[in-house]
Image (cartoon, rainbow, N blue to C red):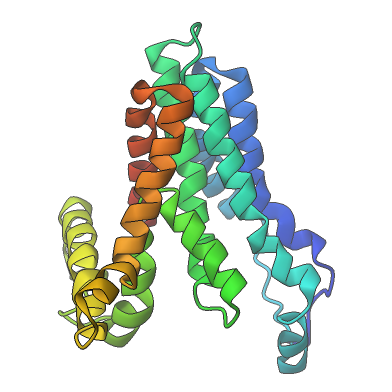
Amino acid sequence: MGGTTESALPYYFFYIIPIVGYLSLTTLGIWSYGGMIFAFVAVPILDLIVPEDVTNPTKEQSRRLSQAFRFKIIPVLYMPTQMWLILFGCTKVMSNDISLFEQIGVTLTVGAVGGVGINVAHELIHKSTVWERTVARILLWSVGYGHWGVEHVRGHHKLVSTLLDPASSRAGESFYSFWYRSVTGTWKSSRAIESWRLRKASAFTKIVDDETNLGIAMTVAMATVLMTWYGASILPYVIFQGLVAFTLLE
C-alpha cells in the first residue's frame, strides 16, 4: 500500500496489556484475573469488530522509521514496565489480606504480561545493537526463558517447519504434546548450540561464555533477590508467572 502514519503514538497501544495488569492488581477480587480475561475474551472480541488495517509503510519509510529513536524506544520501555509489574505482583501476593484465589489471579495476570514480554523480546533479539538485544535477554530472564533467545535465533530460524525443529508444530498435534516437545526440545537445542559454539574453548570459557548458562544464572539471581526481599514463600509466584508467560508464547 502507499504508506502509513509516521506517528509513533499508535504503536504504544499494546501497552494496554500492562495497564490492564496494573488495574487488575489494584482491584483484585475476580478482576485479579483481568490479564487473562483481557487476553482471551476482550482481544478476540476486538479482533472481530475492529476493521483490519491493510496499510503498510513504503520501503523508504520502513528503512527510515526503523532507525528512528521514537520507534526504537517503544519495545525497549516494555522491559522496565514488566519488571515493575513483577515487583508489584510480589507485593500483592505477599499481602496479608489477599486470598489464595486472588494470589492465583495475580500470578496469571503477571504471567500474561510476561507472555507479551517474550514477544517483545522476540523482536529485540533480532536487532543489531547490543543494548536492544540486552533488553530482550532481560525480558527472557525475568520469566525463566533465557535459553529461548539462543535457540530461536540460531536453531529455529535454520530448521523452521522441519521435523528437526522443536518449535514447529506437527500436523494434528495437540497443544499439550506440542508444549512438552517445544519446551523440552528448545532447552536441549540451546544446550547443543552453545556446546558446539564453544567446542574449542577452555573449560572455564565454556562455563562463563555459554549464553544458556548465563540465562540460568540471571534467572536464579533475580529469584534470589526477590526471595531476599519478600521471603522464600515468594518463589511459587516467581516460578508460575514465568510458566504462564512461556506457555502463552507456545
